[in-house]
Amino acid sequence: MGLSLYSLTAYGLLLTAVFRTFTIPLKTSELIMGVWRQLQEYFYLKKRDPNAPNSNWMRYMHGINRISLFMFLIAIIVIIVKLVMMKK
Image (cartoon, rainbow, N blue to C red; front, side, top):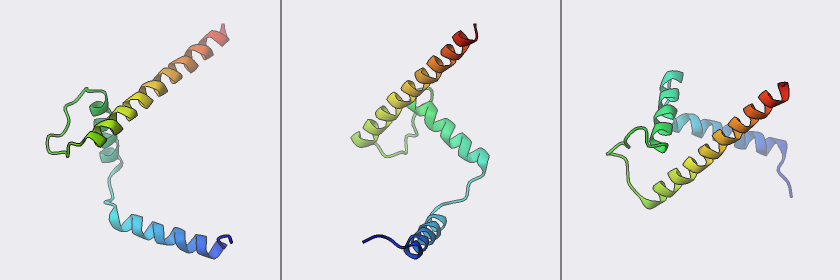
């Protein structure tokens, strides 16, 4: 029927253990620089890593991410403009 609290807790602990096993701890600065590099690659500000695998699906994913980032930035600009106009 449903999941008990025990099974949810056990499942959560299992996922946490697996996640910690297969992830490499990164410093915050390394993580931020990785995100920054990825954003630069999305917006064609920086060349892609030539050793990275090249596939159509990866290209599609980056294209969709690029569109969503543009939409997000436009929405933030609209919100800021509305806030500035309301203060007048």
